Amino acid sequence: MTMVSCRIESYIHNLICTDIITLEESQPPSEFILEGHQDMDQQTGNTQTELSEPKDPLPPVSIQELPELMQAAIKRAGWTDLTPVQARAIPYLRARRDLMVQARTGSGKTGAFVLPILERVNPRKASCQALVLVPTRELAQQVAADAKILAGKDSMRTVPVYGGSSYKPQIEGFKRGAHCVVGTPGRVLDHLIKRNLNLKDLEILVYDEADRMMSMGFYPDMVQIQEFLPRREINGYMFSATIPAHVIRLSQLFLNEPGFLSLSREHVHVEDTDHIYYLTPGMDKDRSLVRLIELETPQQAIIFCNTKARVNYVTVVLQRYGYNADQISSDLSQSARDKVIKRVRDGSLRFLVATDVAARGIDIPNLSHVIQYEPPEDVEAYIHRAGRTGRAGASGTAIMLININEKSQLNRISAHYKIEFEKRPLPKDEDVQTLVAQRLVGQLEARLRGRDRLQIDRMQRFIPLAEQLAGDEDGLALLTMLLDDAYHDWMHQPPELPPAVSQSSPRKPRRRKRKSGYKRRRKKGG
Image (cartoon, rainbow, N blue to C red):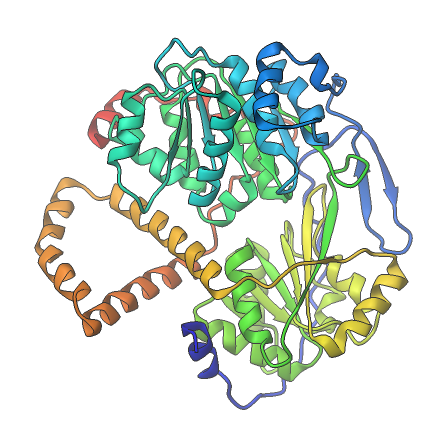
């Protein structure tokens, strides 16, 4: 039995019946306006903004219209044609226009930014000219491998950089003259602070899977990296599978008046909700929910259940597992209810568990996820649930957990609303463990960067103890306990998000507002 299984088993207790109160409706702020037209879906009630292209649109490109350097790279990769995201995004990157692109995993987005990078990089200059920030070690390895194939042997040199591995080969890669660095924000920042990496010749900065970087807590590192960018203008590009409001704010802060290009199905749109379901074993929904939360790491989510007892059960499981979760119940005093509602409104409560009664009134600005622990008994209730996300020009995710006996209800909902649900496989325990380990390493590295020399010297006295504990079974259990506590202390905190940007006076990219103490801070950090 896995660690997850053991911990969840111990949380199953008697269920207590509770009620849910209705919250007042509030209008979420609209933070950006896109060119295009709006159509109201009469059945779902969702407004969709269709976007033909960014302002001053550029036509899509074919392989034959690309320069010889790119065509040679495409031939090395064995491609016969460009994917839609490549054909539409490449012209904007070649025109040096900042751009935000909605593109799902597997859509060919890596080629969409690597091919223009090849054109911009000067292979005779032994310095970093392109930086690609990614959320995970695996993605850094994948993007770097794709870039090496496209570049060939005698062109652009690419170095992957990520936490949880030795610094030595990464530093050696920099010394050989890495033209393109692909890395996680935390490890890239480490190298910048230690002066292993210099960005004075940087031309292009790409944020790949920006939504996942935000959900993994990399926003503070992304902000600090801005301090090491050159003072002149560079081009920035952001690729994201979804476009929740906090990612929109991120693009406004880190890019220079970016265009928005969203590719989904056969048309371009930004406001959208992904309808996803996971088929779970009949008695394994609690474990499945935990794994999905670890995988998705929602900024903020409502978890819907059909009964008061189930609401309380799910809340207890999440709280005892270490998550920042609560419920709205009639058993609470008025003052306690007000506190929960306030935490929901100000974003300090990450997971709210509720029944459909709450769905009729609750409206959380910038809600990224709605998770349905079970399908609603009433087909009409599905839209009331799913409609809580994907608002105000942003995209959202509606997830439903079903067992084999509930599949027929899913089919009825699909037929009633003409929604094509996407079936996804449940993440495996080992996949979740790998992802959690990467997040924790990133957080610990960030905390280590914040320590001064005295604190680092103080740490040295525990090196012998750490080596001793790692060498025997009982000691390993103690280290594991400390890591688990550190991880869940972090998970209790809401993720730090970009500040709202005024529509009337948008903020300039942070890289263009460096303070005069820049060099002094770098010296101190080194």
